[in-house]
Image 1 (spheres, rainbow, N blue to C red):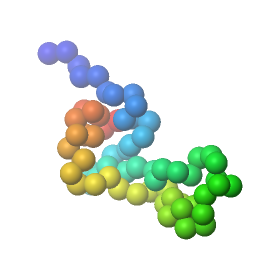
Image 2 (image 1 turned 180 degrees about the horizontal axis):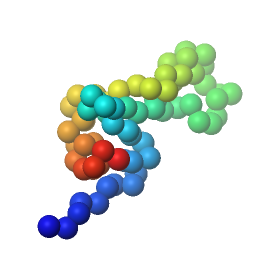
Image 3 (image 1 turned 30 degrees about the vertical axis):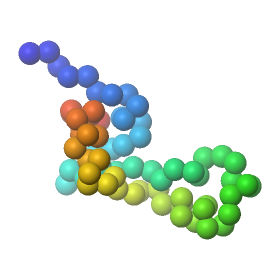
Length: 67
C-alpha cells in the first residue's frame, strides 16, 4: 500500500503532542496590530492553544504520521 500524504497547510498550522492533542497558535497576532484593541492583542497572545475536540479528528486525518 502506498504511503499517505501529509497536508502541508495543516503541517504548518498544527502539531501533535505526545498525548495526542492537537496544538495550534492563536490567530490575529501577525500584523496590523496598531489598529487592534488591547483586548484583541491580549486574547491572541496565547501561542500554545489546543484545537477544539470537534475539529481534532479532521486535523489528524490531514496529518496521518503526526506531522
